[in-house]
Length: 264
Ligand code: MLT
Image (cartoon, rainbow, N blue to C red; front, side, top):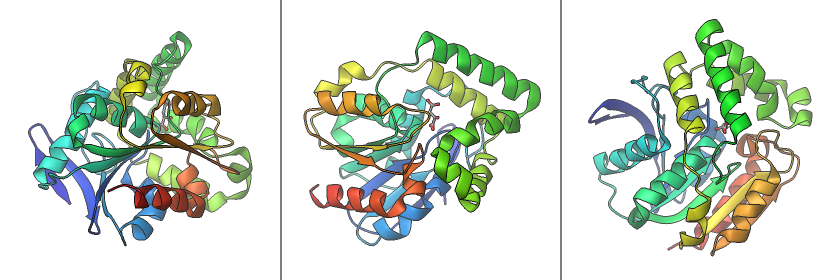
């Protein structure tokens, strides 16, 4: 499906009925990363999954893509499909950065948050330098050069070594990201605002989720968020890395379903 927004055509999926749950993918991924969630969750909920600009089937547009711009796109999508009721907003990694921006701008739209494998803090000086290195590499050698560096870190060491099918699946999803989408998202993440000051003001229920072997975002980042959020629960899934929803889909889905059953 696609929605015509003021300056882009956003591709998305919309499945199921009930409380709307917006699932925002990470970088450099797309809505296909929710493949193991959608059938299960759409039995009880309306699951809306956009492809952010330059990712999946949504074409790139001039960057950078600030987290606020991507959050505005998500709200414009909800408006375009006439969702006026409160929405549960879930984001993994970059999707979590977008979820923070969305809550900062539109708290009145949000019933609850799911923050998976993400962090509230901004990029450190070193992380900003690494973003610039990745941007230069993508421009010089193409997206596959950046993907080759990232892929081994997307999953836990063990799963990366053993689950060749899953590694292939993640790679196929990542390969759909356009060069402009990759560069613009890297710029947006590099320049994103620190959401730490927001944490104590988030007065909706929050489920913080983390894979015990995440190689990209440290467990301590989730623990710090959990400590500051007034209404949070924390689920640390064993034997999983950054893409915990694909590595341990059953325990991920179970934790999300338990959390959603408590949201009105
Ligand atoms: C993601 O998975 O969305 C990214 O790895 C997040 C990041 O690079 O900060």
